[in-house]
View 1: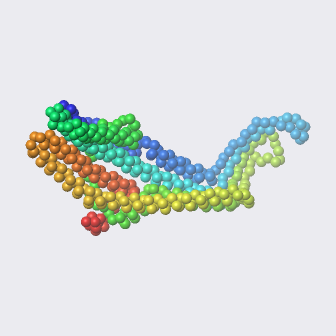
View 2: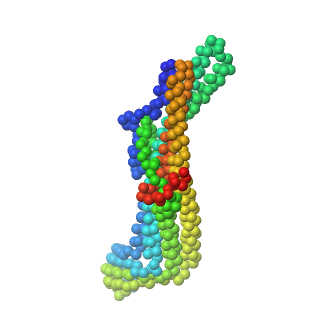
Length: 431
């Protein structure tokens, strides 16, 4: 009996009421903006794009250089005697016009930077979704463990009673083996669920970037927004095409590639540069100017196949980005449709079925409690386990709904509450 009590206590260990220090969903989601490798990759790419933008925009800045030298030399004009020939020269250059190459490259870099910034926003949204998924996985596994523990307790009682009956000669060895096998299978399933519960906690800790800090207890969140109005699919699709961060980022990268392609084609154009210089020399010469200024014209008349090769490479990159953009658009549309359908299905079909199933299990449990003592020992535990399974099913529906709404928010790039549904919503159409 002591072992039965231990098993029953263990079945509620992971689903007991929250105590101080229990991990809540808000605390988990607060980690979405904290350092994590997934977020770090997107942040590094955004910073790299900003640095490339600064570099591109600085190509036509003034370039000021200082040359200085301490040296000595001789020639026939000074009687082949070594004389000092020191110098100090300050030179300033600025590109006045380069055929638009700098402007095109700067525009491409700005578009690239905007695209990487949009990808960073999507990375944060995906971090929230991943954290929610890991959090709900732990809760569901805990509920499954509680139900499995109830079933294990029931099979143990049957096995324990069977041993007494076998000693009295009322039960054959074959029947005894079958009862014990059911207990061992139930125990195996419970222990496997416990193993998976630890794995789920490890995955949650990794998602929070706290490896090794496994939460012993999680707070069951109060989910309030699962019944918010669901707009029509066409409305959501229009918002997705206008605001989805990944799609916007891909469009920015595609436009950046177009600008880079134009910049490569402008390599054949001439460039005009302003130059000013002041210098001081220790040896006077008629070919040296102390102060000068002028314009330098550079016209690349022939560069072999270098420019053509760079243009061809950029064209191929543009075609690749274009294909990726179309693929992304199709995938996002499909993801939106599946998420929209899932929300409608969970609210209109899965939730009512889970509610009725839970009510039925509660009624069966109450009936089992009123039956005679023998059935109380055999059926009450099963009824409690089935009630626990029904509770898990109801909770799972709400968790899946919360995740579906979070996916929808990530796809749209804005809260769904900001979208006004049409008068005839999804519920009216599908009822």
